[in-house]
Image (cartoon, rainbow, N blue to C red; front, side, top):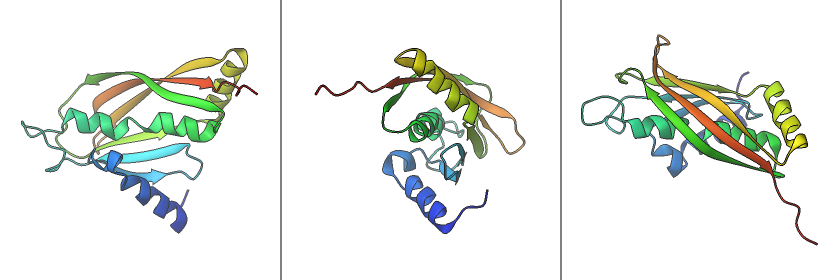
Length: 155
């Protein structure tokens, strides 16, 4: 889907948030409906570690916010969405720009809502790979997201 100028300005705004900018990563695509995001994490002075490869903190900071934000933006304000746990498996040192692609299907959102109709909370697990330009996986993350309906305010 082509980006409008408004979408591009919104994406740039998120890229300039200090909390994300510090990761060294850059959002290259952000769908208007928050169901797809693409990022890149270059190997440069800001992201390089002592041995000359991509710093693991930059890797995680680059991918950490997206599934939580994507779910929260799609479910709306009646729900709480939090990162619960993450596991990281390093497969190969990052010696070039790395990329990640996040996609949230409509069926996944429907499954979350169905789980929440049965109970007040649910957890979902997502796998995120940071890959190089050839598609070789350098790092895999498995992230557990906690989702629950907000409590009704006491009248």
